[in-house]
Length: 104
Image (cartoon, rainbow, N blue to C red; front, side, top):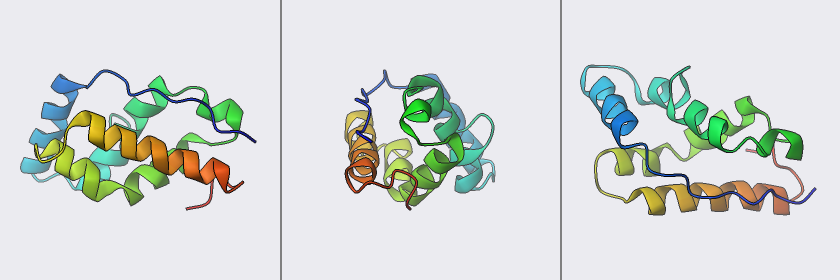
């Protein structure tokens, strides 16, 4: 199945600050990435075409978790949102190109 075309959504500036604050207050990065109000959930709500293309929300969470270093660098201000999100889109697109969007 072909990969859906994903866009770089507008940067979640307020949410990013909340996520960073949560980490500074002791919340684990994996919880910030994959919690109910986390980064993966936020992306899932913007990339709804992933589900019909064959990728579940849980699988997206696994991909985001595997990309945690880059997400952390964005949250810490060492990467731009465009860099972080474009890299994640590339990772997802490659999964589809390999014929296994769920493969992590």
